[in-house]
Length: 398
Image 1 (cartoon, helix red, strand yellow):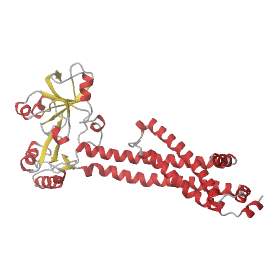
Image 2 (spheres, one colour; image 1 turned 90 degrees about the vertical axis):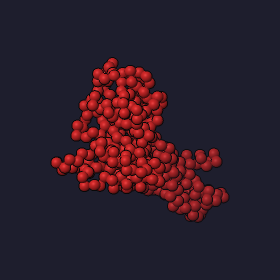
Image 3 (cartoon, one colour; image 1 turned 135 degrees about the vertical axis):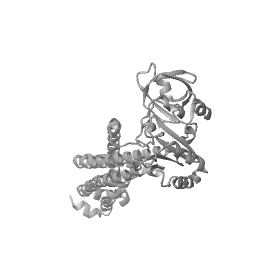
Image 4 (cartoon, one colour; image 1 turned 90 degrees about the horizontal axis):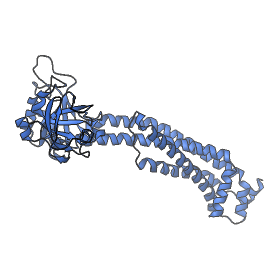
């Protein structure tokens, strides 16, 4: 084995220019493949987060971008719509959100987002609390000045359960803190969410919404969320809700389901895979053809050496292995360089990237598997050519 490695080293050193050209072409192909994989995995991760944020068996209703005709008397996302769903959905839980104007809290330099909601929100969204409790029916019925805050706001403002705080001149008592596992900053601020929240958020009972100005004075709620009792009941609950809200006296709605959330991401993923995939394929093909040209040139230049090896007893497969291992070494070195450079650059400029990126283990393993396939595919013909050389003919070439 040491002798074989020395032969490979000497063979590559003897054609340094060709080796460097093949190395560069392969590194370029592997870098493009790594970028493609990071983008595709990032888009898939974005789709997965969007579904988890909404809920696998949940859907939402938003005011339609095409409102009802003036004078119809129909108001999208009103209390009446919420009550229709609550009274008639046999297998689903309904909640509503209303975003109020951001306000300043006493002693805080930044504004806080106020969300008016009810006791069902945490269960519908699948949120958990790190301490305290969520709003309950008694808070809603008595218009209690209770407040649930995010963990990020609790850390930034140094608030905790039982703390009396004044927001916009109105005193409220913190009764619960949502855990970071329940509502993440990244999900809350994503454009894919039903109602982008941010990380400095406080949830209050909906009857207290009159204490602040509403962002949308035309609607009493900004989003209605429905969660089916189980995944198997999701389709039935969605169909039943569509039938309930199909009456002509009701306005149109914008229905947000897991499918509608991920549809634009899937379209973008296919477009990226097609366009960037072609570029990556061409780069890999360029690297493979360059590698094969290097191997064929090496076989021809070293014909006398091959003949001498055969005359001294080397078997055809041993000669073939020499060139296959040379190809493997060049390919894996190029893959390591291309993948490492691509990873480093992507991580460095990830915040400025126009698309989400993911740096999972798959984005590292697949380029190496591609390198293995590339070296095997494009070194086969040169290795076979070397193995089939007759010793006498090979020795006469000198």
